[in-house]
Length: 626
Image (spheres, rainbow, N blue to C red):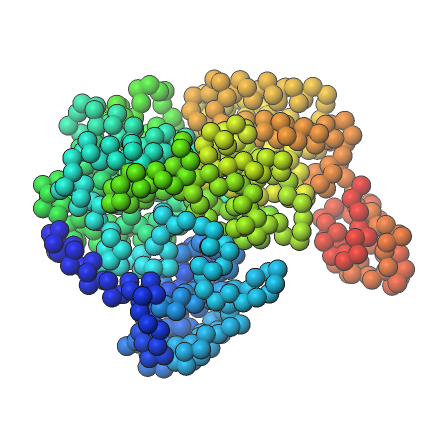
């Protein structure tokens, strides 16, 4: 083990400056100059084939004898998932997207050798088809403010020296040596940082409660049990910048006088677990974890606890119960974890994004952080933008940005010029915000007033083809499966709400069902034991609030205008529009469509399975939903 001092930490940072200057574009661009090829290598990129592109580039660089001046690095970046596989070449900052292994030869020969960027691989503006060569000039990135994600495309997540060159562990050194625990907490309180895991509780206040709790044994926990459908913020941070999270935990430990920590990460995140494990071992090898960190006399170590993927274990007391080796079920509060948490000892639990913000707050000051965002919701927030949106991926923006700007300016709007209907915010127990509220700002209180919650940052966009009754049914089905069953309101109430929603979607809805759903939702919210049950009715209550007419259409008219609930619609061919192109007949898997070419076709309702293939295939809008 090489136990480094603070001066040695600074030396490593200084030596890394040359590398960073290249990646930050501070080095003059020359044909023969050193190049850094930073290929995005998070889970989404791997799924899109980035590893094959990486291997092809590696072979080309070696075969051309460029190893001495071309550094190929796999980052953890999945920021713009729609464009994966992608890479950035520094110092030019050229961004290549949607790559294949066959593109490697052109990138090496044209760009790395001849100094001529490959224009055909640039991102192209969808409205003008204009090529945009540099990443930060693309609207998706240009409208973001990177704090949590500041190291994306800049560091190798498996190289601690890369992280140190970007100031990793400088804040830990400051916290351990220069300032007191009280001063750490004061900076957090000044920053206004609120928990990014869902509830939005002030981080500094939580730490203060734990610091004031009596006891020789205390714990620091990181919640990386990201279970929301459509959410991948924490996973991406762990894959791209794990040392930021470790450093945040060290600072938290000093603040409350804890000496042991756990990162609770779901086992379905193998790449995140791998990179976290590497980061922990590297930090230990430098003496940044363990005993007498940086010669400060302070001891702290941590380990990874892999969860089995239970959604309820995202709730703090259920997570702690799971670490204790018991079934992950929530406990009655009070006492709160700051007084009695893991093994009944004072404990603080923060999620990945919250902890990743802490080092920058300690380095630059709480007042610096508080300048971003709104008065009650400071700083930035990372959202996982997905669903019916042109540009999906990670989005980091200052708190207070309107939802409309995120979905349209950054997300690029709705595909195929479809009409925006709603955005689900806050995960499965969040709420659906309709088009008339698109000017709502991303502020904890403003979002709550709409009937949704900020949650951990999942943002699922829906268009006119989504049925809001079916959406509510989908999320309630998820929550029924994930309920631990400990308390009656959640266990029985969610099940009954799902039964009613299923009946409505299957054409069996009755008058009075809406009122029953509203009553059940209120009871479940008020009497459930933990946050899962207390927020579970949100998808139903928010859709009833804004899309009540869709419920009424299903129940009273036996009609699903979106054409999603199969029991309530059928497809027909409009004979006045159909020109007999025969494409729908060729695509129909049941041979339910017949007719001569260039003459209107017929659809046999007895054979039709309502798969929608004909609807998608028709280029003339001749297939209609009745």
